[in-house]
Image (cartoon, rainbow, N blue to C red; front, side, top):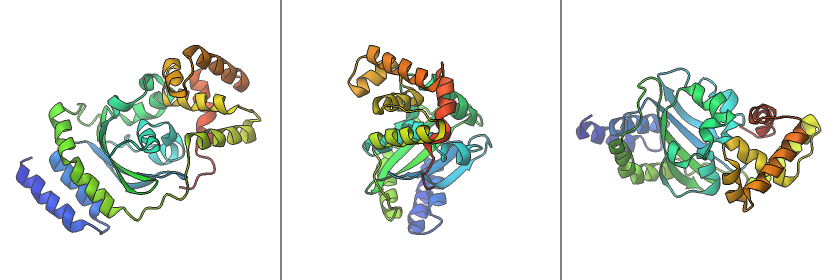
Amino acid sequence: MQMGEAEKRLGEAIAALDSDGFARALGRWLEAVVRHDNLTILAYFRGRAPKSILRRAAHPAVHERFENVYLSGAYLLDPYHDLHMTRAPAGVYRLTDIAPDQFHRNPYFLDYYAATTLIDELAFVAYPAPGVSVQVCLGRDASSNRRFTQREIISARLVSPILEAFVERQWSGLAAEGEISDAAESAHLIDSLKAAEGISLSPRQAEVAMLILRGHSSVSIGLKLGISAQTVKVFRRQLYRKCAISSQAELFNLLLPLLGEGRAA
C-alpha cells in the first residue's frame, strides 16, 4: 500500500486511543505497514494465563486450538512467553531468531504450532505496566505461504517505537496480579504432577523438564542452568525413569495438561 494509506490509518489509530475500537484500528494501521495473514494481540502476566485482546485470521487453523490448548497452558512453552519472563527489551522479535535450538523438533511445535499453519511470525513487545507485557504478533500462514522479507522486517522495526507508545497508553491499566518466576513455575509443575500422578520430581528435574518441553537441547539446557550437557542427560534419564516414559513426546503428553492447572484465565 502507499504511504498515504498508512498515514491515514495511523491517524485513525490515534483517534481510537482509549476506546474499545483501538485494537482493531491498530491492526488496520499495521496491515498498511507490513502485510500479514493474521494478527494476535496478547497480554502476558506473571501469575495468571495470558489475556487475548484481539485475534484475526483468514485461515481457521491459526486460532482453532488457541483457547483450549495455548491459553490453557501451552503458552508456557512458547518462545514469546519466554521474552515476557526474561523481560526482553521492547522491540520487534522474529520467532526464528529467538526460538530454542530444537524448537522445530519438540512436541509443542509438532503438536500445536505446526497445526496453526504459521510459517513466519513477528512480535512487537511492549511493557504498559509492571509485570505486564503486551505482544502484537503478525503472522504469515498457509493463506499466503510466504515469509516476511527483510524489507518488511525493517519496516516493522521503524514503526516499533510508535507501537510501543500506543501500547503504553492504551493498556497501562492492566494489572499483573502476582509475580511468577521460573522457580515458581517448576514448583507448580512439581505440585501438579504429584497430585495428579503421584510422581515426585526434584526442583532440578522439573527445571529440565520445562526446558525440554520448550525445545532446548541438552547443550542449550546446560548453558541456561550452568551445568554440563552430560549432567543434563543424567537429569533427563532420571526424569524419564520417574515418569515411566521413554520419549519427549510422552513427556509432553504427560505434563501439558498440568501446566495451566490452577491458573486464572
